Length: 337
Length: 262
Ligand SMILES: Cc1cc2nc3c(=O)[nH]c(=O)nc-3n(C[C@H](O)[C@H](O)[C@H](O)COP(=O)(O)OP(=O)(O)OC[C@H]3O[C@@H](n4cnc5c(N)ncnc54)[C@H](O)[C@@H]3O)c2cc1C
Ligand SMILES: Cc1cc2nc3c(=O)[nH]c(=O)nc-3n(C[C@H](O)[C@H](O)[C@H](O)COP(=O)(O)O)c2cc1C
Ligand code: FES
Image (tube, rainbow over all chains, first blue to last red; front, side, top):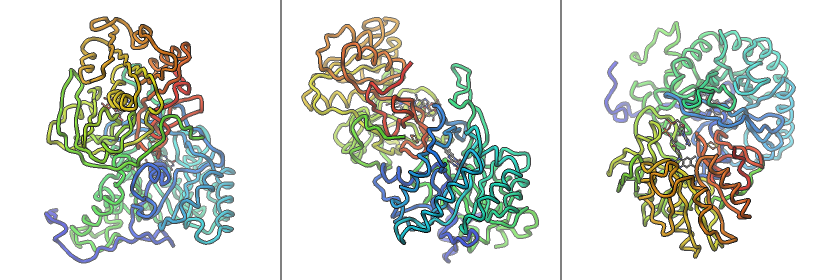
């Protein structure tokens, strides 16, 4: 297919970027991936006011666990061919500290989706219960708009919980069933690619009441230290992400979106607007940016601008018009637009 | 996970800027790359670093590099070609543009220091030019002891302008034979001297033991693999007496006593 050379001179009409994750309206489809963009730290380190000028359409903080976690022994990260590996081990200051940090986010105009992790089902339940209580009793304007939860059942770098839940459809269903009655907010389940058939786990989550699915978390992987020939990471294994995983992530998003009726948040190796559009074509309603945030603090807004240009170049009037074009049974192609 | 203030607190906030390479000088496998960066030149504290994007495709993460020196509106980086990313960075030419994010991290504390001893090994010496200048400007008496593998690595000493600079090589091919710490042993050190250490962890451990035996306080700048460089990812922790701390934001400069070294 030949694309116009200068997309911006082509089709001057407005491109509709807004999308809906169930009841949650987002001004554009690009959010951040948990653990890769800490708003408090960005504010503390960079001159730019990231709260007033937030690049994403929703904020997903680092996964919160009931107790503080120190995380895995170092080293924890390394670059790999077209990607990176990490074994952070869900280092986070715990629920109480997260609750204390909420007022600092009150000025954020974008909705927050709280990522929740745990060693066992009861931990997730306790975190969601405590958040619901805090949010219900908070005076208006003293906390940000918490629109939902993302249950992280897919971190590959902790010994118990998380991945052990997310690789087991029955455990996943039991967790979602336990959390569902606690909240009317959007309930997202973040899936792991480390399973034989992701659709089985995805379906278990949806049948148990999940409103939305996000995928993928990182792929279990290992890097060898070239000098010692021992595993490089302190945790021995870690999770692979970045452009190296994009084609596999696209296939998994495609499979889940084709099989299930709920909205999907697609991620894995997105660094450009075209990458984002590919996930949308594979059925994603929104996309999340992970490792690309490390390469540039303005990755979010660049990707949004590029996505808009990519849609315009194809004369696609909206994100929705591109959604699912790569799915089986979609007779349309971007050429017909 | 309490944040323990160790080095000088973060004074100025960071920006991402495209900077033109104005000069490149090569010393063996090292390159001193000067960049026009008024913002960074004004704000950086000795010991802080910048996250530099590798100017070639295929790289996912930026590379952390210390600010080596500040000259007017320019900053200089001292880069050793070690792997693919640093090799590409050390090979840049005048006129090229590099994207820098910084200044980041804590800097060295230089206030109220009468006498300073800078102990560095290998590329760990990078931040010491700026540190020596800031200390001297504040009235400190500065002595530096640098240790290298051999005379080839020691060529980087040519990038430094520190009046009292002593060099040792492990193979004795240049200067005294031995390590930076063994070299420091031979120098007359006044009581109250503040020790600044930068280099591989085993070397920092040796400096720590030596400083302790001479009842000297000190600061150490440490290295870790980084992803974000600004506190978001928790990827760069090292083990300290206060638990895991992030090198990019709680460091890279730590109180010498906090470091847990082999
Ligand atoms: C605070 C700080 C200041 C530094 N200052 C300087 C400096 O002034 N001059 C200089 O030459 N080097 C400095 N380094 C080390 C420099 O960052 C590494 O040599 C460089 O990242 C290696 O990249 P590579 O692609 O060549 O290596 P590869 O091994 O190919 O890189 C793979 C990955 O490992 C990381 N990595 C590899 N070795 C190191 C290391 N020793 N430290 C941190 N990350 C590493 C890379 O950043 C990359 O993510 C500093 C490191 C830190 C943490
Ligand atoms: C350093 C790092 C930390 C992460 N921490 C979390 C986390 O706390 N919770 C979570 O659900 N996913 C976490 N992830 C996974 C990302 O959110 C994302 O699913 C994954 O990196 C794939 O996207 P990417 O290829 O764009 O990075 C982390 C990833 C990285 C690189
Ligand atoms: S490199 Fe991300 S927290 Fe230090």
